[in-house]
Length: 197
Ligand code: ADP
Ligand code: 5GP
Image 1: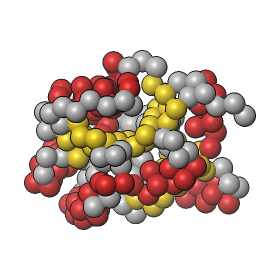
Image 2: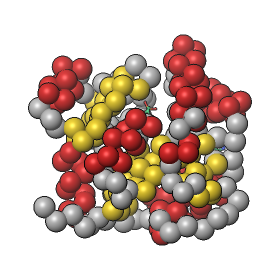
Image 3: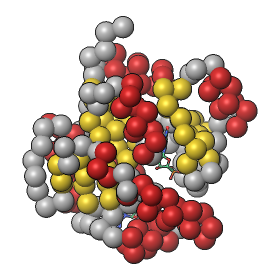
C-alpha cells in the first residue's frame, strides 16, 4: 500500500478543550481528515452517529478486537474506545493530514505503528480550571467527573512523551498555536505552544 498522508495524534485530559479547539482548527485547515472512533460510551445530547463516534455495543466492539479490525483500542473512563484500521488507511491513501483524537494509551499504540507521527498534548492552565470546564460542559455525573479528574492527573504525567504541548488558557491563542504546529509540524515557539522534543 502506498500511504502518502501524515499522522497527527492529539490528546488531552477530558475537559481540557480538545474538541472545542479541534473544531476551531478544522474550520481553518480544511485539508484535515479527522478519524471517527468507535466507542461503547452512550451518545451525549447532540452527538451524531458516524460524525462524533461510531456508537457500538460491547459485543460488536469485542468482535472487532478479535477480528483484528482496530489499529488501537483502549478502555478510558470505564468505556471502550478504538480506531479501526480502515479509518486511518483510507485517509492516509487520500493523502491528507490525518488527525486522531486519542487518550495517552492510544497515542502510544499509534506511535508503535507509525513512528513518524507527530503528537500534541493539550493541557488546561491548571486542574482547578479543568474541574470548572467539566462542570461547565455539564454532561458528566459527579462520579464520572471524579474519574475524569483522577485520570487527568495520571495523563498529565505522560506529557514528556509528546512532541508538542499546547496550554489551553485563552481559546483563540491556543487554537492559533495548534494551527501552527499542525500546519508545519514544524515548530514555532509562542505564548502557549511548547516544543517538547
Ligand atoms: P474535551 O474535548 O477536551 O473533553 P471540551 O472541548 O468539551 O473538552 O471543553 C470542555 C468545556 O470547556 C466546554 O464547555 C468548552 O466550551 C470549555 N472550554 C474549552 N476551552 C476553553 C477555554 N480556553 N476557555 C474557557 N472555556 C473553555
Ligand atoms: P469522550 O468520552 O470525552 O468523548 O472521550 C474520552 C477519552 O477517550 C478522550 O481522552 C478521547 O481522546 C479518548 N478517545 C476517543 N476516541 C478514542 C480512540 O479511538 N482510542 C483511544 N485510545 N482513545 C480515544
